[in-house]
Length: 304
Image 1 (tube, one colour):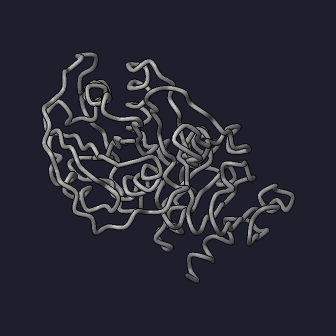
Image 2: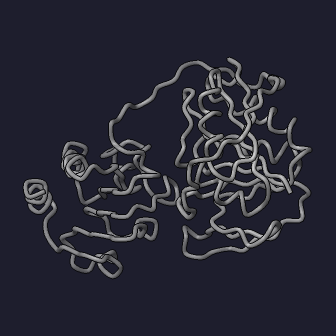
């Protein structure tokens, strides 16, 4: 069997972490070919070729793919689909936009957020906000899926796969680029960070969320937020962690002023700071501090 893996390319740069973890999952299904697209994607393709387990890299460079529009990329993938039994991508914002379109064009189901590969037809994925794992068996001739990369190990570097340039696909003309507004940050990417500090409704205001940011910066961590904090306007939407936000699986998760919804119970070590000693998160936290966050967090920042 052959697998087409869509490499995560942003502004000509390969997201190695997401792509390499997706390679680990894809190798369980067959020979892996990585597709890199963009206005400039050759450097990303060369980087993808170094991931162990990749047998070949295809690269499509064209201005058509320069602004991450889903429709042209989906059309290109569909034009290549006949040679593959599985079409997969890391479960990123781009993939969640592209892969359902690919599935629809191929008239097959989309398997989203796959966390386990049982065999070539059978997969595991979370349901009910992660409270249960669903086993799904697909009889489609081509399986189209996104991979929740936080559950797979990083494939090592050291490969030397050949890189092949391919022709640009058709432009469906269904969308056009207007402008990009990208928030710049020196902090780690939330979905792949080893340490995450998240704030909840208990933080109280957008101004007070600066405490969460200061603690995160001290720890070299990414900043997260609960849905309640985002809905209240305390934090931007791209910081949201959970079922309707980003999936995280850090080595250390610090939950500040968060009650303990299931989506915040991710992390090898969970530290909870909450003044409510009855908060559900204390039932699962490895370390819990019952304290006013406005007293505890500044002291913690000072001591680190």
